[in-house]
Length: 107
Image (cartoon, rainbow, N blue to C red; front, side, top):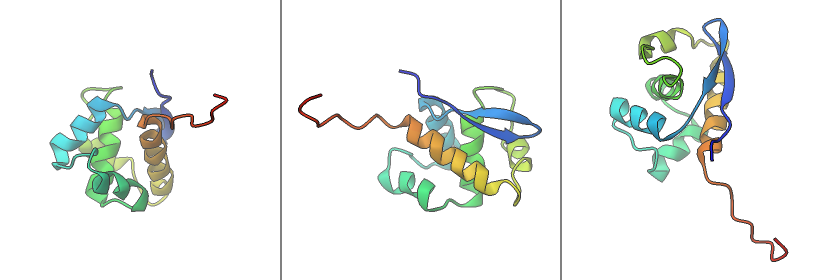
């Protein structure tokens, strides 16, 4: 099942954040941090380092443009849109999680 992507305006256009396994692997290759580690994953909602924010954003965008660099992505983030970017990443991460199991006996 394909999860919805989250749109965020960056670099003058709306870009689609996709947090799939490829994005998670790209993030790990760049940072050495495993998003399957609950402590690392919870840092997304608590607050990330600037380097991790930039790397995760790049990892969620590279599906659109394989030539996209981390430095390009970093240039799109500023104090004017950092909150929107962080919220978009949180949304993309939430979309990547399996849906909760239905525990209602009526189903």
